[in-house]
Length: 100
Image (cartoon, rainbow, N blue to C red; front, side, top):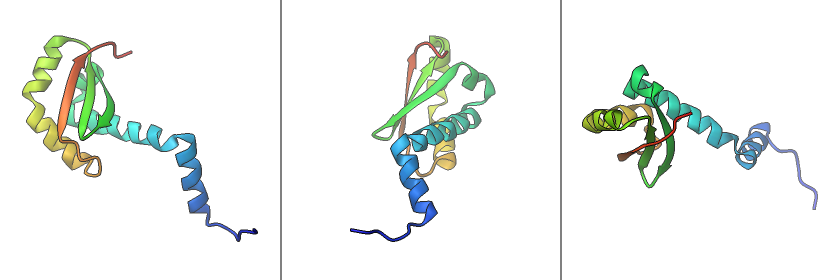
């Protein structure tokens, strides 16, 4: 069955979804939002991960910073809600790990 011409926007959206570029772009947006919400120093020693069921996973270089970010969690959630309204982040999960 012959198909007619497709809009370029539709074709690009399909290609982006198939190749995983949307996830890469989304990760970059989340990184930038985290940098703004947490500040440059905290962002330098942490990396955002996946958002699962409204919970953003953040890998942090050391336990001292985990404690500090835990104290700031309400303010961080408020800032992330403003910066990433479509993500609907309701909680943050901090864990110590490599941030290379």
